[in-house]
Image (cartoon, rainbow, N blue to C red; front, side, top):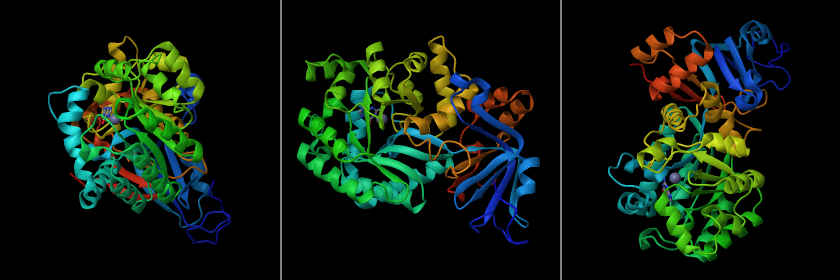
Length: 451
Ligand code: GUN
Ligand code: ZN
């Protein structure tokens, strides 16, 4: 809590003398999974105040309790009528595919050949990489996403560009160089040893710098030799704390190809397991065509799934089974998967996630949805001790949402009664227009231009 022992008239909180800033509005955040804890999983203050000091959350609570604790003269930004929540966490996205979003007419393997590899080849040029990285990071912030786990390309300069863009804005970001040493054009191919050396150099350069973390990034099993996959395991063993990101079981043609390339494997996931790539901080996108044993294996090794609904629908890949994932106890986050995905907005992504569960005769409650987009994503990246909610001491990454951003949203919100109804209308109708402001470490990083 912000304390009251500062000098009168000074913008200071208790103890360390750092200035405090306060934001008054409706506040929602999660302290656990609603599927497990029910209503005890969230904290909601219809009239709340968030207090930030030194880039960290100093307090979040009811206005009547928090306001009296503020030091005299503390600046209180009036966000009444708006909803304050933690920044969104996008657990799977490709920055180098920004310019091929919305490319028509192909399923995964053709889409990679026709659109993705040619686009990624351009990232050998550091100037191109820097220009796209800057646009991408601004797009994340404009959509309220404050942390993302990001694929670069196979070119080390592409990793430098995305980390530099995030670092310049003090964003917490996980990224890595794509490893692929077979079955791809020479313009994007590396070698097992070259990819290993480049990854090691990039880890030394970026991992742990500011809020950045490195992820060893084998694209997917079909584009890595067994030697390359073995070296991925070595990189992880040699660098505790480094992440891993890849794709698994997205598309039926892909699954059949993996069975041909790795005839000894029990399943697609088993290939990664064989090389020690299932572990904590390993995040696998899609996870559609898995069986119960695969899900159990992910849960027991601590690996996480990234559910990417807009991509799965756009590429016709299939329907993620959220209930089976939850029942297995595996961690699940939400990913936009741009450019296979069709939006940078986690609100648009929640809309499609809801529809995917509907198609499977399941349902995604609005509270579970916003948990997935915030603390659930942070937990799947094992960053929930730092980000994902507004508990005291957390890094102050938060967003201010405007529930009257469009005439239709405003009209529908007016006719809601409960918090759950309001959240549901927001996730079905909302997009980047609902993101009024985005704060990173307590600093304004995006403000929506007035219409
Ligand atoms: N599998 C391997 N690479 C990719 C990619 O870039 N996008 C998606 N959606 N799936 C992949
Ligand atoms: Zn992807």
